[in-house]
Image 1 (cartoon, one colour):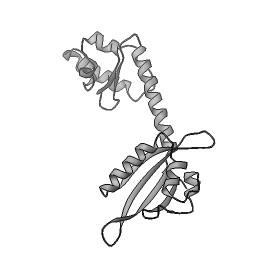
Image 2 (cartoon, one colour; image 1 turned 90 degrees about the vertical axis):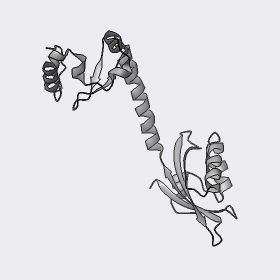
Image 3 (cartoon, one colour; image 1 turned 135 degrees about the vertical axis):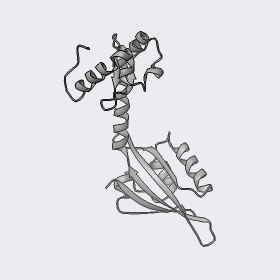
Image 4 (tube, helix red, strand yellow; image 1 turned 180 degrees about the vertical axis):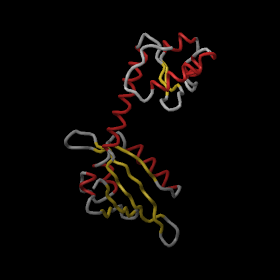
Length: 193
């Protein structure tokens, strides 16, 4: 499993952890201070501490993500959700934390960002105007600088238009039909009406 549970006693600083704790966290620690010092990446510690302290002072659940120190030099990411538990006097006595390994999601997010950057670089490097439209609605979702230049409009004004609005009003139906016939096929349209 990629989730572990631990309970933090605020008076003693002791952690009482479930069976999967060491597998998920990568360290066997007995106190919250040890957790901060041995598990959380040094660059993330101040942010995690501050967020936790602020939310506990407000009596709120804390959700935070942070990097984990790893002996194999790979960066792992954990997400902690810390829920305060109160004693009979209404004071926070313990914190119940669910810790989840979110490394895979973080890697996917990073890869998605890289792909988006590559896509944008290719789109903007194209010397010809490129208009990208939603296949179902015909709404323009992206254009490159060459498209904006040829239209004499900023990209922001072009995005959101229907592709038929790029053509003279008298030809809307013709281009609408061409768009519909081109969508749903894997071929590239090389000639317009």
